[in-house]
Image 1 (spheres, helix red, strand yellow):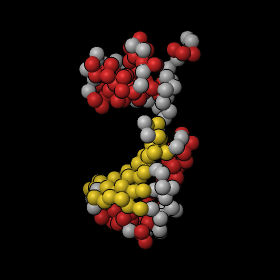
Image 2: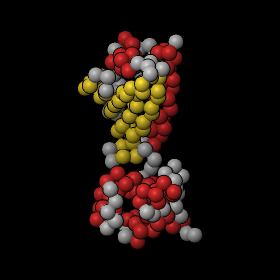
Image 3: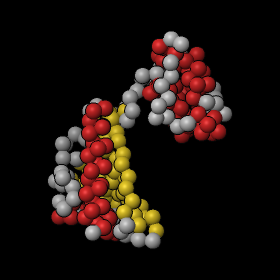
Image 4: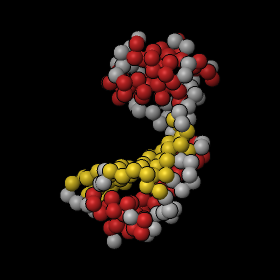
Length: 187
């Protein structure tokens, strides 16, 4: 097999899952998109092929396109049009109100968040916070949900990161910070 036809499917959804929802495996989609000139197209062009010629639903158009772009070296893991983006989620044994308060209050944030001097741009109480991160360039969103029985979850999405190395660093950073938050909230 030549280097140009190799497929890197590490980190992608399983072939079985893709086939169950789309009727084709990754390899079959990659062959179709290669044959349509996908390696020379931008993201929108690939999506258009999947929509117009194969009638995939919107979510699957995006999933197959991103998988193809990653497998063909056209996109790195966590790469989005505006930079790189990572997310981290954590479930806590505390109420939604208590979890949200740990983020909303600068005093509470300083007990667990290493870089606690951030600016909340928009808040939807107990649902989400949109945050200007301390570097002034990247964006942060924290989304909150109740898991019932006194449990709640936060999902942190950090976007507009410069490169893959920054994405890896911030993924590790948020893992550490959410672990610290767990220690503070659950003691």
